[in-house]
Length: 131
Image 1: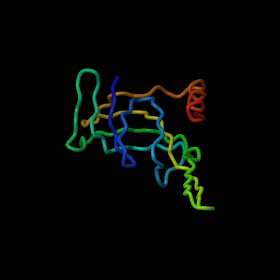
Image 2 (image 1 turned 30 degrees about the horizontal axis):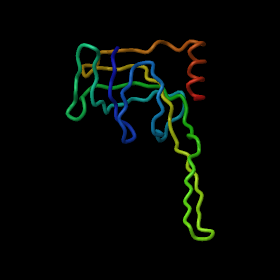
Image 3 (image 1 turned 135 degrees about the horizontal axis):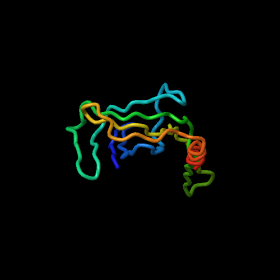
Image 4 (image 1 turned 60 degrees about the vertical axis):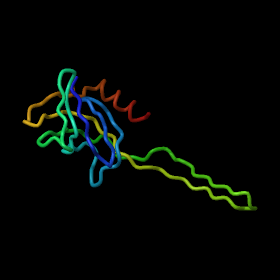
């Protein structure tokens, strides 16, 4: 099974084709659009691996944007021992949910490709989105 290590939003992700990921929100992106990740740090399979210095030139990963949304609320509560000295704050981090379609090598060859989305797999995507 082929995989790639991509960098987006200041984080690194090990991705496989067909995988659904939550990543930092991608600016100016609409659902059901194709996204290309060109910052590929490494790619390979069980037998061989190609590591970049720092990136692998020419390699890329294609993905579909499923949705943009916000995570659950994280409460920040600060309390000190003085009277009425407390503060409550909340935060909802924005994210983009993507599905990895293809992984390309540095010479443009397709290493792995996700299966086409059928009606049953659309249900699986909705279940993964609801998690």
